[in-house]
Image 1 (cartoon, rainbow, N blue to C red):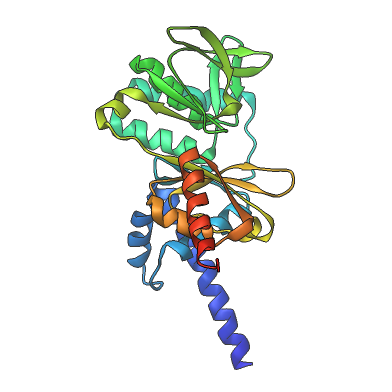
Image 2 (cartoon, rainbow, N blue to C red; image 1 turned 60 degrees about the vertical axis):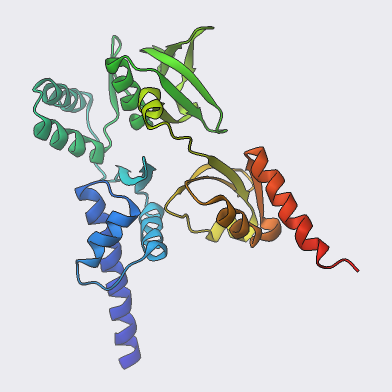
Length: 289
């Protein structure tokens, strides 16, 4: 009986930690380091990257869409069980537009944060209000249009396209981006896009961030815990997952992936693939007679 009570308390504490993790992300978007610092002040024990990654994944398994944007975890969609009518959606959209027109940073931030947590991805067009499942991408494109800055559009396969944003249009009830560059002018489907970068900021920082793609298979794909600098960009029909990794030290990443043996395959960049082959070949030399 005592063991049962102890087990119940342990489960209860874990549940509290998961809920507190969720509450912290509701208050604001946080990096993993910031989230660890905030959780450590709550008197619920010590936290680390691995534990909080588990709690975030628990929230995701409950249908809460938590994404990592610019190195910060953000709640993109919370299943609150509410459905908004077209009229209610129109009102909320107008509130959002009005808050932006006030030019009061605090008010605009509060309204925008509130609507983003509701996940009300509405976009105003000549055909009325449209809904899109990728609100974040639309907002980034809108901001680039308003600032008249060049952008880099990053696709699911990690390829990219540098261009100038022109307009957002509707084709067959789908939102599409109209873009131009020196060679062409075209429209692209937003569902193929995973991120948009402001090239002006990128050029100012003058930093080249390497994104490494690798595929995990079998049981590893099912139980793998994402690191702070990783995100899943594709889930294949056979259950394999493709992960995008940024910022991790090249040598540390290669040796970590090497431990996954045949359940892991580096897809790109090619120099990482070649370096992994060299590590494997050099290891095999140790067993030559």
